[in-house]
Image (cartoon, rainbow, N blue to C red):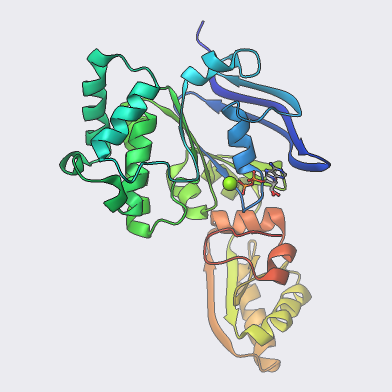
Length: 329
Ligand SMILES: Nc1ncnc2c1ncn2[C@@H]1O[C@H](COP(=O)(O)OP(=O)(O)O)[C@@H](O)[C@H]1O
Ligand SMILES: [Mg+2]
């Protein structure tokens, strides 16, 4: 009877001309989970989402939504899905309530249910007291909340969100996280979202798939990713920008595999990491390198990502900004 997977992506390839944007992705999203597809700009996240919505046809491979083949019966497949796209789609000239009303009519929500589903959406998004306010006056976070609530009005079992928190500040981001957790726990909605924020994937998602250059390069729970990748006791040394290459050289000399990131050099230290830190510090003192900070931590999703994708692309263009993955092209 019931299909076990909310979403099945089977050997999906998407080419644009001779450019391959999605390169043989296999992924099954379990019912009831919050799944995060994590990757930098240009990784193939939005292309994947568009295929899941039936807006783009895969070049090859197959997509099932709740067991329904997206290319076989797109209308039926889509009834299971709610969607929040990367662009804001609320109508600024309409009030929160009117925005929801229009959407409800678009989705043929019966008149008798429309009122209730608008109330539900307003409560869910915590916008009850703003029902008569024009969406154009809303903050980015409020608009996003309205969009999330709107995507749930036709009571889909799955929602797809493409970078729902990109561009939001920390506070608004946390509100969206709470909203998504709520929807997932209380309504049992399966959530498949894309993100380029490492901490978002780490804190919000039950499982993470890391996508890079159209390929899924890692899959697991945040804990699995951290432990299976063989990273332990990550050593981190902060120094002046002009010294970083030298510091990395010293890391290599004592058998560590360094990654340069912003003004830091990091490497998994393994079992006798403290000893290695001593060796590093003494070598750096000899080389007269100004060490600004030394620390050791358990691996984070950042470390996992760096280890998997290598540092090269990021080092040369300096594209890794904070904890957000930026474009690598
Ligand atoms: N319609 C298109 N035609 C040609 N190239 C495209 C098209 N859509 C996306 N791409 C390319 O495919 C790659 C993946 O894009 P996208 O899925 O939007 O990445 P992401 O959402 O992860 O940032 C990018 O290099 C992008 O330029
Ligand atoms: Mg995108």
